[in-house]
Image (cartoon, one colour):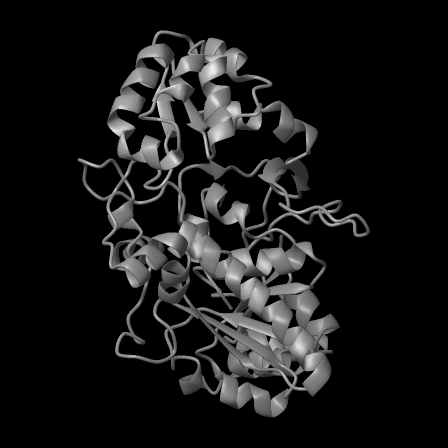
Length: 404
């Protein structure tokens, strides 16, 4: 019962691990991200649109986080729709939702309601600000929380305005946290026999992943600032411009800095009293960076990469997406998977991030579902509905059937 990114990302991870995911969608709108485009992947095969909402195709956004799921079209504002959801909750292990606190409780679909019909239910709520506190009823999007919870303040160039991170990292991290919390709650249930309510929020997640930046403020009273690609406590540790691009270099210790100096033909730089230790290099950052920029900016990216190869120094080019997906290591690890979609034809997606020695995670991927594609299947196979009961649910407006 989630839309957009944090919740669908969480449930996609569970689906990757083998969970049967039933995605509950509004019969007319579906997940908000179905319309978030372009780009859209257009339909290649004929689609029977009887009753079905018309979309220009399946959006790339929606396709990115909804694999390995079944979609059912349910109107929870209808009594028959709420009854279906209650019956599902009585049989399922996990419920994940991202409604404003209290909204589902008003429909008798809150945790306190559903744990009565299934005490073993793990009920995970993802919200902008959490279930308690003065902001609990405020809606929250990733970009708003990035601004409100400090991330924008520390992102961007030193003399530039605050900027958002290029991907919705707060949403994604909240999905990751919730996925981990659900797994922990399932382990706890093995001991107690009971489920529990998980309260996950974008605000708390984003605050927690400030990590060392938060600690510097809490322990040292040090207000954070923007550093661009630089690191406040390490030098050199940043992106350097080349003749035709950029290279990122990180010298995290004295040995790595000496390796850098040797690689660029300036071994004596490591002996310069201004740069002997990391503390020295941080104190004299401006002078050091000016020297390195003078050397690196006169060479092409490929030349710099050749110089640094086998140096033991962490480094890499700043790649665009084409270069990223053409990366030999990305190809070797089979990061991109091709899946056959019944109505779109072959689609490419980034597969699971983790590989397991004894589990075939990611070997078989089901394509993201069409809106309501599995309504009849779930009602029949999971809830045991007869054809007449299914038709009654449709006639009452609680469910919708689409012929694909």
